[in-house]
Amino acid sequence: MGGVHLGYPKTYPWLGGGVQGVTGALNLPSSHGCEFGACGGGGFGFQQSGNVPNVGVNCRGIETYHLGLIFAQHCDATVSIGDGWLYSLSAGPIDGKLRGFVTKTHTLPTGATNFWKGRDGLGLAKCLIGAASASQASPDAPDYHPVYGPNSNIWLNGIFSSCGVNLGIKTHGPYF
Amino acid sequence: MAHTFRISVSSVLLSVLFTGGLVGCRGTRMGNLPHDQAVAAQLCQAAQHLTIGFPSDGNLVVLNPCNTDINHSIHFEKAPNNASVYNYSAAESPDHKWVAKQEAKQLVLQTAPPSGSGVNIQTTRLLSVPQWSPDSEFFFFWAAEDRKRGRSVAECLDDVSDLYVFSTKSRTGTLVGRVCSGVPVEAFRWLSL
Image (tube, rainbow over all chains, first blue to last red; front, side, top):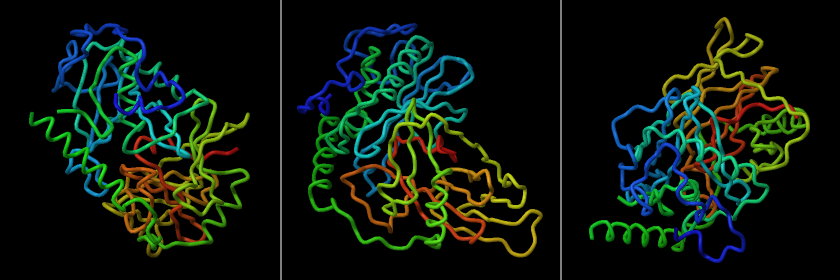
């Protein structure tokens, strides 16, 4: 969580350090968080849908200045609580502030590498939507910094962290 | 060990990119789409009652079409008490007089039914279908960043999406704004404030 302890004057729960252990239907392996692709039933090879509770994290290489070649990625999440919708959770800068967004869609993100998928994730999906919605509703937002954070990846890490899942995403993408 | 090395290299390269002279604006150049001040002026005039954006929990992410700085024209503000959101994402305009079809890397605007040659709108990779304004005078769409246009990477070291507006009146369009990855471009609609 390197980007969140750089002397920012305020604490933003969705940037990490939130409540641990809110796992809902997921059985997280330990307080150390989940290993890559192995969070309590998570893994590769299942199709996300709006009809089944699930959680997915999507990362794609950044095309700008070919930064993807040095493994810089942008990450966001797509989750469902089984109500027919996919909820896209993401953050980006507006007016120099990092803003969180929750948007409903029926389409999966394209061109992304799904680096983590968690099945049976109703509790986690609800928690994530709640945390992202709280961020979206907040009248205050931290200053955005594209390199050192907080940025979109740090925000996503913080949202998951507040729901008890350690994604291991750093300022420029996941470690793997 | 390999992981550590990879992370270190990418971290260093990112830092070098950021501090090594890429920060700052380059000269703004024309994109593929014909730039038309008239479209910007029409939009600015209509801004009293019509603009582009989306509600975000009591606030709006919204285009200020009168701001000609495309890198800062989309901003965040408190939502007014009354705002209508229009969702005309079909190819055909609401008045049924126009059709905007997506073909590979271009949009083709034709009258409905087709008569004469249409207008080919060349862009970078299209990221959205056209969204028609309720009066059928404009449509907007998102496309991948036109890299010939300058921007400060200090504001977004990530992929950027460009917002274009096209006028059926003048049959020209212009780039009016852009957002960094993470801002959901699929949420943008025409808004009546």
